[in-house]
Length: 330
Ligand code: ADE
Image (cartoon, rainbow, N blue to C red):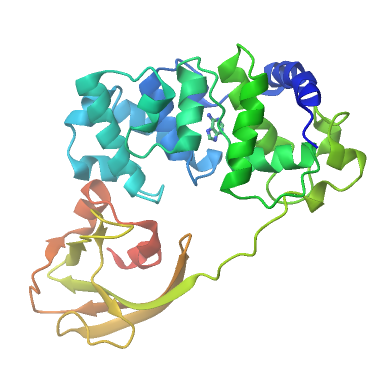
């Protein structure tokens, strides 16, 4: 079913297409291993458009691994604010410390050992920044290749591993362009939502699903698990022109500042007088937060950190999950 010869023919077509069509993205200019690392960690689970501005600002703030390694966690979190999945920021700082103290790794195994770097990102960094023939296969590449081969296999980790082997067998010397060419094809032609734009695809004459008019049958998906729902009451507590914040100590949003919150229906985190109420939802990968927010005044200290709206804006990173309640900060 998998024809290496056909895939071999596809390689130069992709390289020529990428030369013509590639988007001008900030991380494709003046690349070092460190800047590629920043880009790839930001691009995990985040759209290119959202990353573009943050990437430039982040590198102005931390131009090399040295500045990032020597920064405080709060500074890094503030520069990451709005991108979500904050464990990536902590990992990026750890990886920068490794680069700073031990130098840049030179093999896939060395890259894979950096904090926050899994198989896909190790392939991307190896191909893009080190010139190694190490494929990067994520859901986008699975979509492209499962259509290319009209592959009836369920899209899972075993299929990813199979595609890594197939790509390695045909990997050209232009490792960076081939890797990013595949990413580009997945982003602007063989798109994730909606029908693919096959008339623009350099592989349309080779793609088996396209020949059969069955592009949207692939990839074959495993049934999805339902997300867990958590209901929370969130308190924007105000006292003498300041607002209560506390640092999250564990979980997804560890190290970020949050408005005090309790499971829905529990007593408030300290005695207070409610002034206003609104609801909001936030969807993470595996969890959904259904929140009721309260603006409330209090006379108690409650053991919180009390900051002005301006200090919060300037220095403290609050996760996007709480954005709906920031409108109360004056
Ligand atoms: N997504 C992940 N890495 C990328 C890259 N280097 N260019 C464009 N999109 C990407």
